[in-house]
Image 1 (cartoon, rainbow, N blue to C red):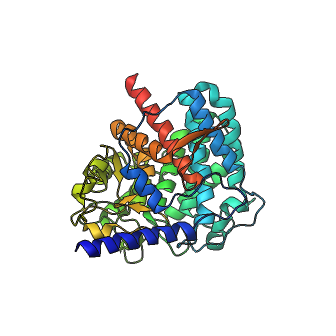
Image 2 (image 1 turned 60 degrees about the horizontal axis):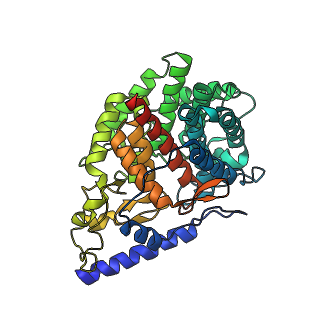
Image 3 (image 1 turned 135 degrees about the vertical axis):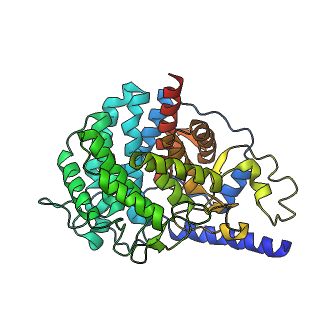
Length: 431
């Protein structure tokens, strides 16, 4: 068994290296080096005395400047990327998500540091304009038609792209007073309601239903109702949540399954860590009761302390059982697969998960920061943030405070957004 396990771990390392090599963004400049499975593994096992987060205005603005500098290197005049949505989506989705989550962080930053509001307004307005360019959002055109038609509504809504754009635009209006995109907000809202009236859940791409992307769209229309003081979407949200509860919960973990078959009304996969955390951040806006149930199930079956990793490995190889993992700190991380599955079956990942190290998903652990803060789990959010910051290996590069160990700008954007939400949650709790 020991030899088989060592061979298995070696194969997993090669597979993760292959994923890193085959899905890197091809562009003129990349500020962040992409860490290998081995680098992530070694940095994880060396984690011991993790320093506290520095959250003064200089560091936060240094991080914001670094992120914006990276985003502004994207070629906005490039043609739209073509994608099926299945394993060929990196160049389409990741720049889009980096801009959205970076924008969300900037919407909230002035709540924590008021002196940054003027600069954040400028950056978010630029991001919302950039997101409408074919280079950033045109990847859905083959699936749903022109996403931003000059006249009328979009032919069809893609919940991933339209949901995130609407969510960001509404945050910009609510927190920064940006009303330049009100026409887009109203048109996407109307088109989203139109499509949900004839379906319980909507597709991310023509042939893909990803439950978590519906979270983005449903949270966005809920936020619209809050901002414009209406209740138009309430019945639609209730219908969608009822469908998730009735047809798409994993029997063992009671979590919403990530990929779903709406024609057969059944899951197409088990819950995946990235999808679970990604959905958990949106649920409090959609349905508070369902959010609480899902968050408890998430903590029970997907979140684990690093200090308990060695006990989790039920076929521990001798070389790992000699103290290599014994000193790991008590910080929460997210697994890519629920603990209701055997350990060996939880070691594989894909493009969404990022490298999976000892069953832990790098991507899901990043989204854990946002999900914990959104579910008001401040203690978990603070602890997860410290570890994510350690793994990011932040360093000053001139005026930029850069996550040098993050594989893509979307990684720094997600951590930055989670950081701002966590700082705000802690500040509100203290006050």
